[in-house]
Amino acid sequence: MAEQSDFLSNLSDFLYPRSCYYGQFKPEYLLFNASLQEFAQRVSYISNLQTNGKLSPEEAYQQIKTLWKQLKSAKKQLEITKEAFSSNNPQQ
Image (cartoon, rainbow, N blue to C red; front, top):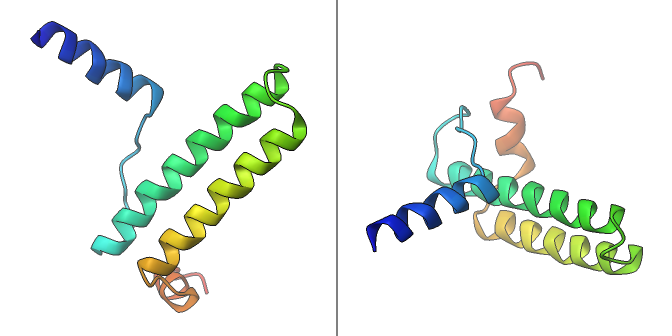
């Protein structure tokens, strides 16, 4: 049973890789980063499916549009504003 659990854990890590977060630590930034990584991973899968003819361009567009709305909603719920991003960027 543990062997199956290890397999599923490794499969999940392979299909949904996560990168470390190096930005300013705030819980909302960390949560948004996780949402952003998931968004990017899913857009990549959708793009690849469309490129290989498994999804029509319209289906791919609609799915990405839905994911974008979910990401915007997550940003809004976490109350992350433009000012928060610009205060983290020392180049501005």
